[in-house]
Image (tube, rainbow, N blue to C red):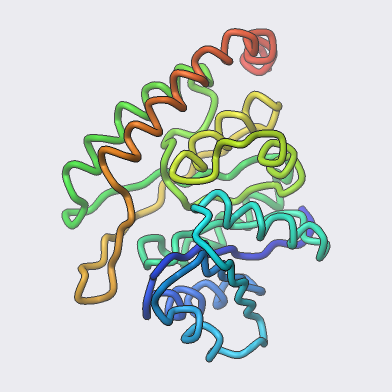
Length: 245
């Protein structure tokens, strides 16, 4: 493993963004926030942290989570980074899990380190139950060899193969990002290590926010899985090789 940074794609995350940046930097330096066309003042608040160990990338219009991460990956590669931890900016993911991800990546630099959520009592039931369908199809598309949770956004990516995939497709720009990239990385021969991670859903009073739209984004994910299931057929030789190893 070479050098690693933390990337926080953010859209209207309010006070949670600088709080998450500070929490992540306790365990990994630097921390980059991508303010993805936000209409609140979260980018301004993040800049108040200064530039020592922090960077704020501002995009003029909202490009979606995958679009924001793509920009950060490109700049991170140009800056010489080999790996990146991607976390949500809204306080859902525990920064104290970062050291375990880093340790696993040092020992397995070719791997994707994928978080698997451990839900608490504060998790919305529809979010917990709804993702089971997507996880079923992602497991089918990877023959059970890939990320155990197709939507969880706490992962450590090897940047070069991730960029090769993102730059070769027009998908994986919004809520399909986590699913498409994890499946295609496995097809490209990138092994996966799954790590259980507790997930928290901060209430709105603490700045908790979600931009997931159930009809729009579930339709997007349905189209994605149809496409991936069809493409999986031509990846059977690669999957057979991976299974044998």
